[in-house]
Image (cartoon, rainbow, N blue to C red; front, top):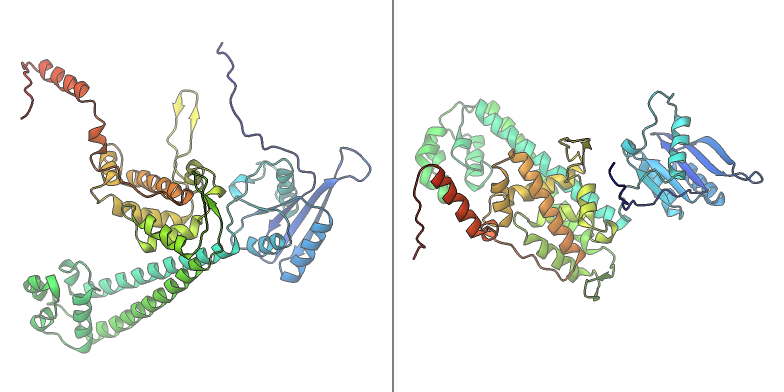
Length: 445
């Protein structure tokens, strides 16, 4: 028999005396409170009622919960319907926990109603069997909303650009095979000329600018097609839509920069004990330091800051941050078997920003690039990119946790420098001797 081993377990399962659980819907919510009985020791009083989701009713609910002395309110994150409940109750001073729906599923086989769901939420809150989700403060929520709005606008613009390319394929115009970006200077000049009525391939090819002029012959052959007035009308609409989205992206970017600059100053303590105020100079420094990460740029850095914030004490350590962002695979072990666990869905906006940074870092001659090329030898490329995303998130955590830290690349030869030369030489020599060779080693000059 194996000897028992004592392990450290986070002891957070404490009994909360006065709790409330709210099953949230679009137009209403089912509220359940569980409080101690006034005269009978050990007995709990459970009350359930429905409340409308309008502001006035929620303010009355908040006043009632405060009068009841409720210590914790648990909400299930149902779509965006939880927001009015969370904002109003939290503004009233209540401790509100937003919990993941996957953590509060009722026991299978039992009947499911709104009342039973509310009671189940209250019981879970009472036993501290759920963990709260990360909900940033209101100023950081403004940054997050603008960062997400910018991401959605860029995604919409990319979708419209793809429609333009599809329209060119329908008109037998193949300039996308010659130009790397048909919406660059050369491509846009050619598109505008086509819409204006110019159909001569040689004249259109002469509109190329910069390095594209070296491929005027290829452009001339690619511009032989059947571009009609029908295609011109559709192309004009799509290009106007792209220009409009570009204008909106610029406006949202300006609002995002202003929202980041308006963030309240939070004193941060460095590992050496120094206190740093998060003013405008600090925010500019944070963006500059994060842009030093391979693959990082101002746009992706803004998106990451909007999702995780600047205060890393919320997460405590980089392992918790990676677990929350779903960049670390889960542990699946039963007996002698260790199953392959997925990382999970996570925050799509944060994962998109990290994926953009990881894709750029994989092409660089840096430690992250070398790590990616080392990983793809034994795993699929998407899996290797997920590993690079986690590495980038760990770097971001340490740069934000320590305001004085600077990014220092380990170098593309990091793994080569860690090789034990004598051991590697002995292994290769034995392999050659096993093949029947006599090996004599002479050091290179």
